[in-house]
Image 1 (cartoon, rainbow, N blue to C red):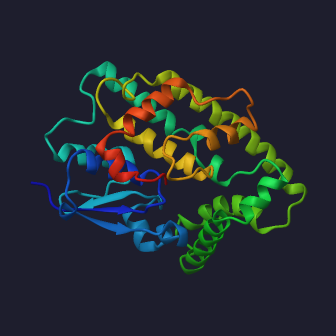
Image 2 (cartoon, rainbow, N blue to C red):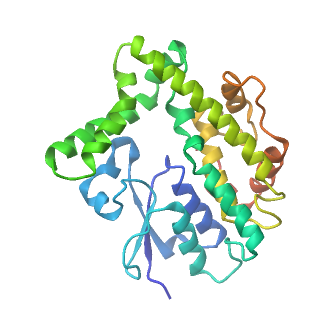
Image 3 (tube, one colour):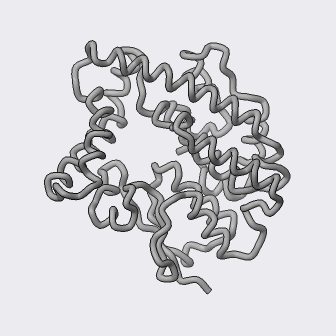
Length: 286
C-alpha cells in the first residue's frame, strides 16, 4: 500500500481542482491523505520552502514518502492518484481514446487557453478600471511584493529574478495611472481573447460525447472542468449558476462578436456536471 500522501492545494487554483476531482472520482476518504493549503493570494507559493517542493512555484504538488521527489504537474498528479486505486482507470487504455483525451488536455493547458486572459487582461480603459478595483489587483500586487521580498532575501536564487520581471510586467498595469502604455496592453489583450475564442471552438470540435473522450469519464474531463469553471468564475458569472455560460460568452463576444459556446460543449458540461465528483468539488464555480 502506498504511503499517505500530501496534496499542496488552494481553492483558487484551477489546476489543483484536477486532483480533487480525481480524489472524489476514485473514492478516496479525507483521512487517506493530507491537504496543505498554499495561499496564492499572499504569494505563499513563492516561499523558499515551497520552492523546494515545487521549483516552478505552482500549485498543485503532491509529496509522499513512497516517492523519490514530489509530483508537480496536475496531469501527473491525477495519474498518480488514479494508479493508487485499481477500480476503473481515468486514463483510457484504448490508444485511440487515449490520444483524443491527450489532445484535449494539451489544448486546455496551451498558452492560448490561459485563463489569465479572462481574469487579468483588459481591453480598454473601462475594463482596466474595473480590474484595478477588483481583487485581481490585490492578487497581483501581493504576488509582486512577496517576490521582491524573497528576491531581496535570496538574491542568488535562480527563481526569483525572472519571476519578479514576469509578474511585474502585468502588475504594473494595475498600479500605474492609465495612460499610453496601456494601449499596447489593450491590443495584446484583444489578441489573447481572439486566441481564447479559437480554443473554445477547437474544444467543441474535439469533444466526443457523452464525455470528453467518449463513453466514460476520463482524465480529459477533469482538466476541462477545472479550466472552464475557472474561466466562468473569473468572467464574473454567478458562481451558483453552474449551467449559465452567458457572462463568459458575452465577454468573449466583445472581441469576437460571432462567438458562441458550442453545442457539444454545452451538452458535455451538462453530462459531466451531473456526476458525483463534479458535484462534490464544484458545488459552486471557482
